Image (tube, rainbow, N blue to C red):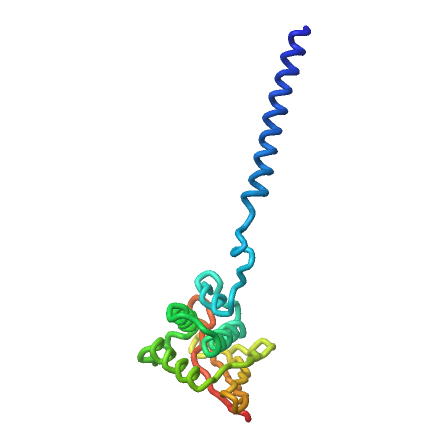
Length: 192
């Protein structure tokens, strides 16, 4: 009988030691394995990074106002921020992804014309200091079997040191076959 209790005590001791070792190893990996290097802990996404890391396949803007918001933010970054040519290409790819195929079909070379416009704006010291997308849901109408709407956005465009011009853009959006809102075009009303 006493032999069984000694075996039982030894077995309990082995099990407790094994559990203790698992806990110690787990705690070690929890504290040491989860520590980030100082560069990782301090890295914040820049405005350029926010646009260049946008994945429209996974996170397409949910409504027409968000499409216009993405357009406005991208144009603000393209006019104002510093970036590489590769980053510019990625931002133009995002813009192209929110444009309607009909609008893109009217462009001879979308990327080249956008790069030329951006270069001219940067040379002229233009920047979009602020923008405001309408805060109400747009009225949706059906035209030729496709849903369409208009979203207004106010751009404050600073031109060098000469001042700021307010431009009201009326964006026309159309829903594609995948139910994604795309920019079909816009018109501009300038206010001084």
